[in-house]
Amino acid sequence: MPWQQSIKDYSVCEYFAKNGYTVWRLALSGYGKSGKYEDGWKVTTQHAAEDEIYALEKICELQGVEKLDLLGWSWGTITTSKVASQRPDLLKKVVWLGPCFGGAFEATPVTELHRMWVDHTYAQDGGHGRPNGGAKEIMEIGDGWLIDTKAVKVPVLIITGDNDFYVNIDRCYQAEKELPEGSKLLHLHGAGHAMYLEKDYYQTTREAILKFISE
Image (tube, rainbow, N blue to C red; front, top):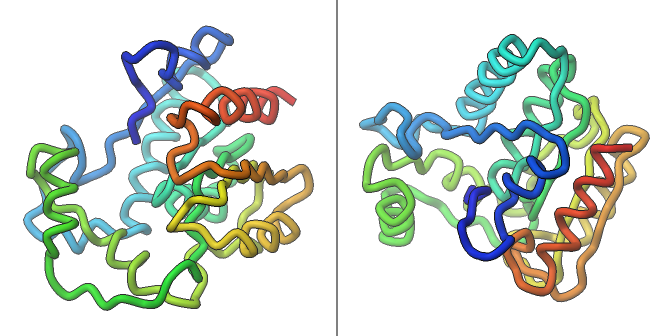
């Protein structure tokens, strides 16, 4: 996700850096400058979670710490949920922005690289990798759940908005009840999927994150 923005004070990275945090950004396999995958369907949620676990281990080693806070947006909420269930020993707290729990729209079979995914990949990643495994999972889930909330072992802050096509609001409230003690839900009325960059909500979003991870 675009954590680093050079427009006004929208940069998430700079905000947390100014508040005393060391900020790391991760490019998953198939994205950004990471290795290219000829078969983009192999870039699954579990595959991405394994990348995140490896990165967390290395960051902890480099910084001489045992645990870190982890932020995920959109598909990143699903990948980080797997990390939080498989390697909670590496985490203090987790933040989910625009969580994709499933149940937001009808199941749509994805059997080929549709133009929407190709355009997105070329726009964001220079046309390399075609990392559509995660998108396939999201589009095909239907009424199923993309996140096993009961398997998550660390406190989570959920931030969601009314105008988010990918989010089932009711599931956010259900998830809050099933997540570990200390978890919280911030429902921003009117916010969309990228509330951390939206003019009316970005400040509230990051202030809530800072408060949550600082407590």
